[in-house]
Length: 372
Image (cartoon, rainbow, N blue to C red; front, side):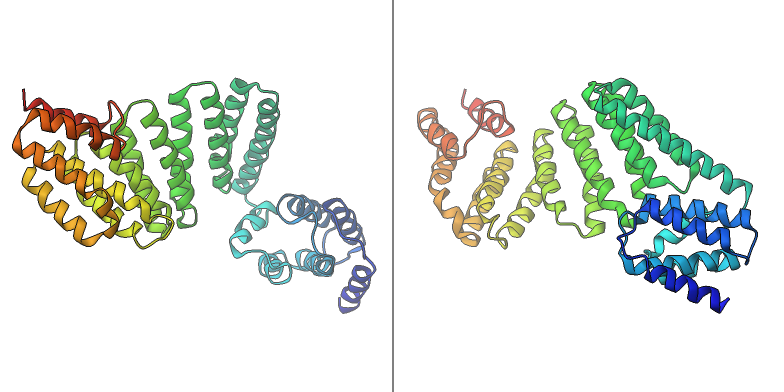
């Protein structure tokens, strides 16, 4: 055995070109053919599977110095397949999370379930490849159907859950092109559910929910959009991802659009406190604080508006630029004088860039309506 290993080492040393998956298969097959350590048929089978696995997740190309390690790993397989996972991980240095997949790919358990799972995975891969070709040909309807079939086959294989999520995501993209929103949402939710099962992919799930929230907002379903963004926010926070801030900015606007201004005020103030600490975001502070004040206008809370205006001016020097026009607006509101209010209103709208039909616009009009 030692002599055989030495001969393999010498053979590997002579293998000077950068290996490809095909060169691996050829070289490993020749070793299996000459090996007397185990059944030749089993060797060929294992080497063939190893070659396909290399082509799929390891090579090409693999650094030349690892060729010898791969050859030794083959000997470990042919001598005692139970040692394969540990040896392959030690010598080839695969990430630990790949080892179960490698073992299953090579059929080390040799159970009928493993065979069935591998068959399903192979079928799913073939469907996914067909779908990619149909998508490239802009046959989005057929591509979506094939991606969905691939996703369900990957899910049935159990070991290929991430591949299933990827196929669901691709199907959703095709459905979006076809403007089949319900199917697109369903596929996206399937992908997100798979990613949620692992803390390593929470942010992928969060990104899907964030996209769904944006899409629902565009379609006018603010309630569903807020629900999707709430899920995205929870996952981003659990993962410690900074994108939680951007989701909060979208959520707070939805809260105001839905008339939930009391819930929006503390969130605007939290966003302001965070933005002031980051140079690239500090100019957002004025907008956040202004919207918090608009919430009090929406709620017709004059006393709360005055208190908040005093607090913001004292705590945030940046807010001093717009404080005078806010003071004029509040005084005109308290006085109840229509002429003064309307003269201030024009400047107030321009200073705060209030767009027609926005929730801020509705807040001003609701106050103005009390004068008539």
